[in-house]
Length: 246
Image (cartoon, rainbow, N blue to C red; front, side):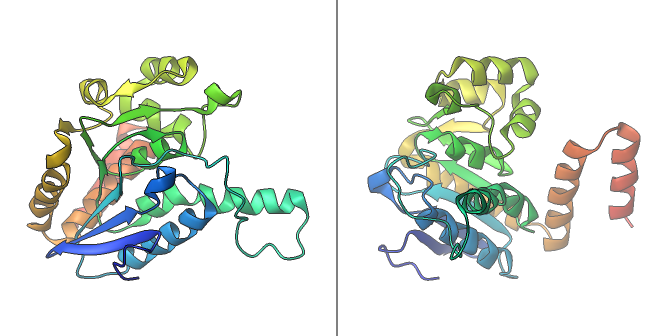
């Protein structure tokens, strides 16, 4: 995949050891149409296989990171010929539901440069990354409940309480309110907030710090951090970590 600006997902290599994946549908606030999500999944797999890439930055073009579901989108999920409507719906959710696990499977840490609104599924994308840095103009909204649906989707009920605590997660998802970048930093949803024009430079600097260490150590640390979030006890976490030290 190249870096032509007419592509819906752009992969660039701005510095040695780092790849940037940018969702490029700014006219629709990078909303989650299948037209965008399928090439995003392909880009994640492509970059994951790049052995000379130690760190990844995920961002959006334009003034938004990702605005979630595209209610105007009529693009169907891929490979649905001969399917019933219920099977098409299942296929659609399969495509979307693998996005977060695919980010976690990447051997490289993923830095999310949240350049603007992250709404609904777009917010979930941010929580599936390893490090989150927000521009001052960014804000977060779970969104589903605003539309008469559940605010939980694509793993948010698992990811958000682990990032900010259960009480804050309940309040945020049930209220349907927006969370500013400043508040997100105060409660730990993002690592830091920076002026909009410094966002990418800051993300690249964090990537350079990561790139200074061994590929093996970086990958194992990422895997153990996620395994630790999912493990059920301290003893299980220690057991997992002990094997990676051998």
